[in-house]
Length: 111
Image 1 (tube, rainbow, N blue to C red):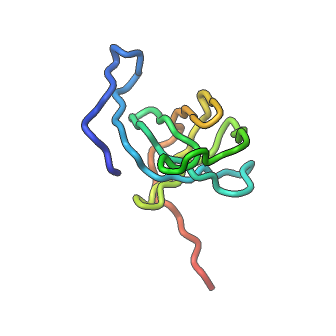
Image 2: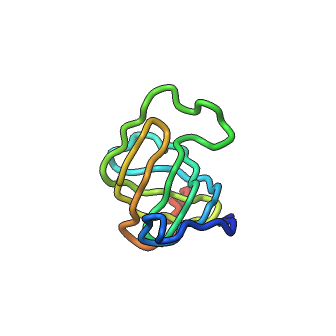
């Protein structure tokens, strides 16, 4: 993942240090009809902060997207997926806690 050196310390109220990143991801799950594009803004061993849509798109979502309590984030560039639990949500920002380690994405084969 493309991660910069900026971190937040436990002194700032975090359980684990966070690193700033701008990684493209997709929110997917059984209760989500179409994948939701997101940008991971910061990342730690225990969770992440996401922006719905991409950082470069202004007003990516006109309507508020209500996420389910649990879902997965797919990181296509790194070919990884992680199970998440919704911690908090605003109109375009989301906080998640990780419920599993990062795992390789399983890609369906074409017949």
